[in-house]
Length: 139
Image (cartoon, rainbow, N blue to C red; front, side, top):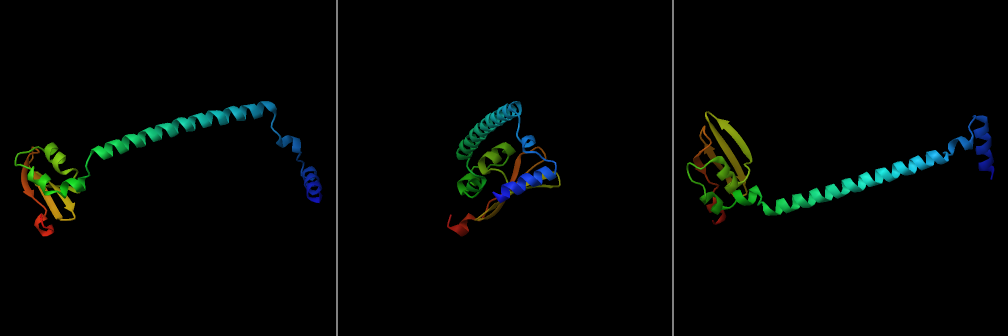
């Protein structure tokens, strides 16, 4: 009780009134509407995020990882001289690094079995293959 009286005295001394801190009915209604609007927007965004996450999971499950592709000797066996970059990309996935050299492009693949690389000419056709040393893993 003493604390309440002290607070009332202090608010009177400082020129504050409790009535000023209480929102009017119109302000309260406006705040309720604003909260409702924000909750709806948040719910909509949450649904969109969930839909996006589900879509990403579906796509990720359908596309083998680059490491799984590049670490498989059967995938390297698909490579043939003259293949376009798009076909090599399908076979091995995204390279760890792409490095231009002279008028050519080298794609570098780092795998647990060692490193491999492919080289394309200036028109984007495969001209060189260096497979990872699969034999060291018993392949």
